[in-house]
Image 1 (tube, rainbow, N blue to C red):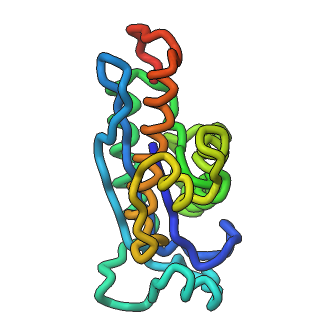
Image 2 (cartoon, rainbow, N blue to C red; image 1 turned 30 degrees about the vertical axis):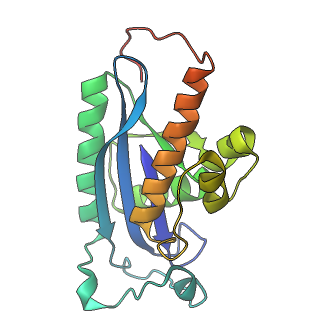
Length: 196
């Protein structure tokens, strides 16, 4: 599950999530990884959260703009988790694995938000992730998302960067390209199994 969060700081306990986007992936019968579903939310800062002023010029988000159509963390996560649970059931998995660029950051924010809303059955693995910064460093020698995308042959629009939806889409394309290139090199044998 590819994820990107845009936040109002670096502390997942105190700082608000302002946007979240999620893209599920699927592997076809021939072993090629592709994008499956997309979902995106603008998030209202949770009560008592901190909004670091230096974060806002970076992500260009005005958290108090009424035109954002923002929803609560709880509403967004319930919808996201519902989609993830359907995928877990469909593919016979036990947990969803977060794929993100600098995955520890996004994972920590998502886990803190799930705890805040007291979600009992978080569908995500508590610590396992796929980090496309590390994977692209290995695959193409670049760890910055824009540079890694360009190095692997994908376009990247810096004007759209730091939008959760755009960054998630680019990260999903990057991850699929890395996994599919590994398959072309011999990768792993394709087995008919329920673990994805």
